[in-house]
Length: 263
Image 1 (cartoon, helix red, strand yellow):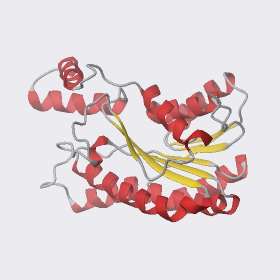
Image 2 (image 1 turned 135 degrees about the vertical axis):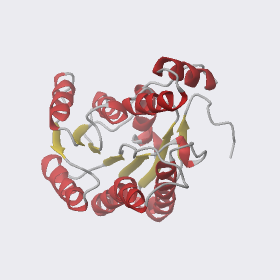
Image 3 (image 1 turned 30 degrees about the vertical axis):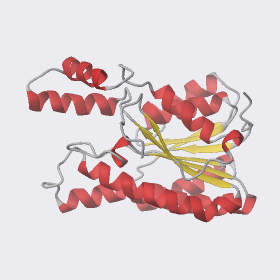
Image 4 (image 1 turned 180 degrees about the vertical axis):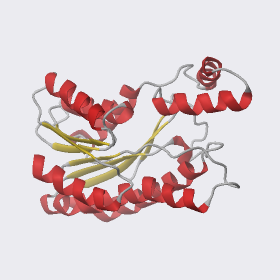
């Protein structure tokens, strides 16, 4: 299937590894030019070089901490200067440290707000005007299954990603007449460094091993396995395509059947 996005420009956040990198690679296969960003410059250089070697697309990158307001504004300017107007925005950011609802400190709430909510909403608002002017845009935000089924010990992530989801749903209605779609993707249990970290922390608390926790996690998923980052990336690439022009305001779960509810 021709997704009809070759030559488009995409800004992919947190794209030096994991889900973000897989999304960048998937978009590159469709001929999309890329601007990558993350906090680790060495990882970015490696990712950019690998993508460039395997495709004919333009690839640029910048080291940036998305939790810093000034850095987000600079990122939007730099990406547009390097690639031209951004057609596809992939909001993606790592999660905060685990905490419970009862014991989360005020400072941790503030940090989570800046990291998970302000980073994506601010960047979206900065990229949006040019999309509106040209009558085309794809805004896709990676959230989590915790938006609809809060996950124990991930209070900040669950709350802030739910807030981002509300923002995206509201925006989707506002910009739909301008040819811009706004969707979120809710990964379930995907094989990333983040999942390994969380399962390692659980193993410490419960006196088990990482291997045991990963095995138990896989058994809880109806498909019987933990998802691959490429499976998130391919769903995102479809939503970014011309073929998904009538899909907006959707919160797409990619979870191997883990979520049981139909609402």
